[in-house]
Length: 172
Image (cartoon, rainbow, N blue to C red; front, top):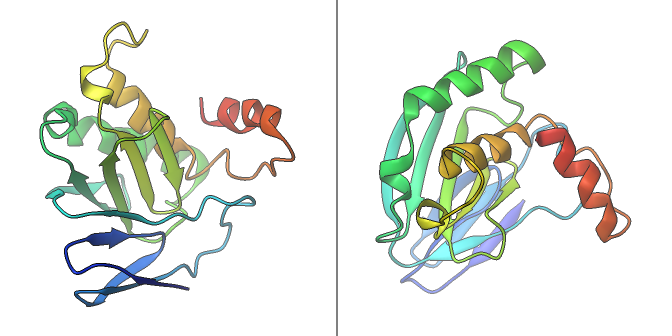
């Protein structure tokens, strides 16, 4: 359970079921089995995300909401039908979406191209404009990679920096 106290100008999102209790308080309850074995519970807050309902993805109908920062180009780069198909593939292969029926995708100025926490994915707000990423569709690749972590990759306990290779290899 997370109680997040924040400035009234911010929208805060954290893993689990989110409740905006008041303009300055957000709670998140994470009551799902199989949470990460290392510290990937995080809080993201921003005053001006544009919120877009991306619909229900996958066979189980995971509701996806995009919280996008202005002018990232990420909203236009997300193809809900394609990613719904990816979630369907993951569900057929590995079982139902492990963290309920909601997934939030947030953009932020991050060092990494993407980062997963249960029910939240954070994408770098430069992802859609990066040149020479090596991928035909950088946004699609990183988003699918981070969604794969919902099933695989968070089950490796990291003892040092070099363990990230194991965690990332499972999702890749």
